Length: 160
Image (cartoon, rainbow, N blue to C red):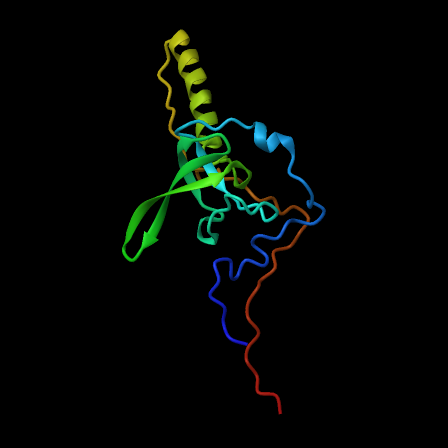
């Protein structure tokens, strides 16, 4: 058979619903609030064909630039040749979810603010930068009751 060139070619597993996750979409999907500037992940829902993004955008992260009643406008960077172009696509809310890519950063910012307040109250200088893990401290290896064993390669012998 020849190769197909359809709009959804090569999406057999990409748009397939997970095991035991078939059926109607939960209402919580429709009750989520998206605001302009939110970072979202695009994950196409194979059971809902309306407003489905092209397969290229499946798994991409973008920023919301427009919000309508049932959909959101998303700016996604797409590499074309040697440059990245910001593409604006409209996707229904069943196919997007809030991204968790900034959670660690925001948690670290909150922790640093708390540490700053504590340091100001004590009047102590405090370093907020993440430090790499240093080398392990030196220690002695005790060999009481054991004899040191010499480890060396076996000499090569021709076996006939």
